[in-house]
Image 1 (cartoon, rainbow, N blue to C red):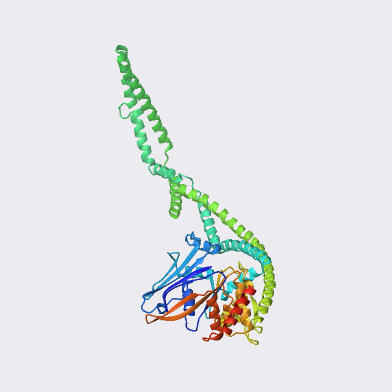
Image 2 (image 1 turned 60 degrees about the vertical axis):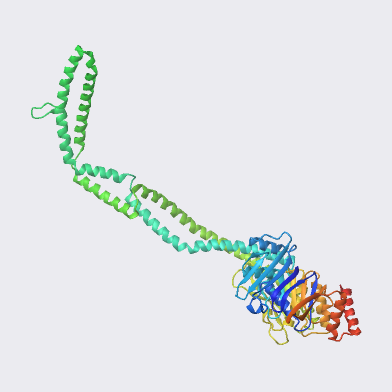
Length: 563
């Protein structure tokens, strides 16, 4: 509920605080007294358009603050928490708007600066404005669907829940399917490349370390003659000797025989004998190895050519992939695994496509049930709105809930819901937002609010010009509807009609006076006697008589008797 409104340096208002009560709050006053200024200030406090012309002459800035009790408004508390704003401990939310001549515009929620968009959204969740030429919640198409679904009760709620669940399944599956479908060409290209690379590597059939082995073999083949010559020469020197020279083994054998004789004389030379004997054996083994090695080395031009060709093939493969042979073999294993996954992806896409068809059919089935339930609720709403409008001298007004089929599935159903109205016979039905008459629109909003009071969750309603162009019994009907709505919602209403003002739970009189040669607007909350006087003035003008006072008293008693 709106607890109070503080206004400072705003148009004709120097400083003003208005305390509001539960139920129906009425603002009255003579034309030009400043009632519209208060409504404008409240609009600004809720996020309305700000201009420098709103600032009181002689001031640099204007400030408006609206304090709300949000203890029963869980949606607002959740909204604040989503934005990182701690819910107030006293359950009071203060919306503060400051505008400057410089153009600076500051929005605060409980002292915390927020963006204008979020600030305005918060205001729309708290207050529904029904002011001429102002857009409000009932002029928003999405709100029409929401209200119709709430009006339809449990059957509509269950049908809508089923549609939301079916849509979620369909949408998630569609996203997966489209990702697979969109990447199908890419997968095909990737698979073709991988198959080409796998075939290329398998044709070469490299082995780990093969290139190093071939390089070693090539070195032997290229140097075969030189190797045989050196090995033979070394063998001869070690074992056979040449040109009258003893071989190394001959010399070692003769030396060993001499040392053996010395050992017989002095055993301390035994280690020397052992050393020479070991060296002799090692030289003999080395000579045999050289002989065998020389026999194995063969000058083979054909094998050299084959080795060089193979090394060239492996070199090209390594250069192409910029990897060594082991890394190429690892990539081959990877490519084979990727091919399997790509092939399974195509199978998966086909399976998901079949599942998508099933989920889409399930969605359409649920959407048809929701549409049927909505159309039943719409017929009932149309009937009740027409009946209520007739009591407000709007019996010729035609009201209709329009259904427009959507091009694609939606989480909210298969159609767009919009409230249409034809103010006069013969005129086409038009959206509510295109109705020009502020009073007519206010009465229609009043009718809808009366019917939807138990399903709409906006706690504060503000009406202006609701009595425009009507009188007599219609005024009483409007007053009774305002009173009925105020049983479950807080209502603020600007009116010139005593019949409506008589139903107020709190009656605020707006007046204008001179103070220090400046015009200022003031607001006074009236007691019972003040209300009688104010109603009498509204009934009889400036000349208040006992008759008008008596009539005013009757209005108050009538309102109380209906309450």
